[in-house]
Image (cartoon, rainbow, N blue to C red; front, side):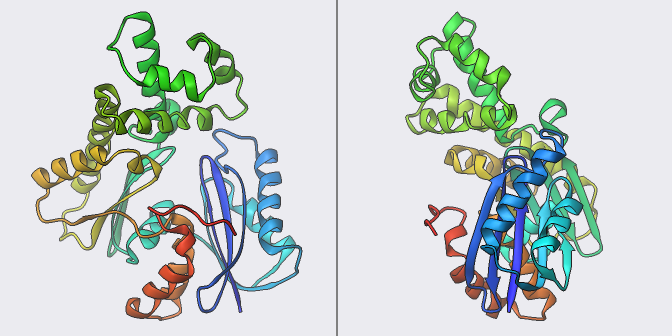
Length: 321
């Protein structure tokens, strides 16, 4: 039997085919699905590409497809049904998918710092979200926000408004810039500006790893922004907290300083709540959801999914398929 799980967000779409034993069979990848930053026509074309790459041109029957699509989920479903017979299609919530993939549990709090940033609280009979307003109106602590602060730190170091920082020479080296001003045209004329700016978090991580104070400050500030959203969403719920706080998204991987600062702030305000890094990337969330819907106990499905989806472990390098 064949199943499908998909994860589409600000910068990428991943479509994964797996079997009833949670063994990954194939995948397809393409660009982001968020209509705030890309046209529907471009998104549809990339969805077609990822789906066809995943299915390999075969007309399969899917027992279920569970998809997290930040953007036109209806378009993804439409394109998927053109390529496969889909018995059951389920649209997943962003926080739901990442929490399931991260902890294997339905309930908890997801502190997401990907390209964007949001905090999702999922509790029995209750859900709430803070953040996710996009790169212009918010997403504080996310990849675009961190990338923007990184680029500005380089600019301020260059023109004397800020402190000297390793960010400046690393950025010039990695982006192959003779002069810092050379980044202006690529940034402003990029067809995917949000993704390009967010990619600067790689520069932040490199500088932070070398102990650069400015890069470390950027990560601590990001942690504080995510904590503010966490505190705000927790205030919306007065019941006993169930589950863990899961720190998901690529920005958390950049420096341990960010996680340390977040844990410190959370422990002071909400002592006793466990904070964990996710086991798997959100693209595995559909498989966990399907296991729960099929009545499989966590003791059975969690190790099987962890093994079958090992190429999508949060802190491991992806293996080439």
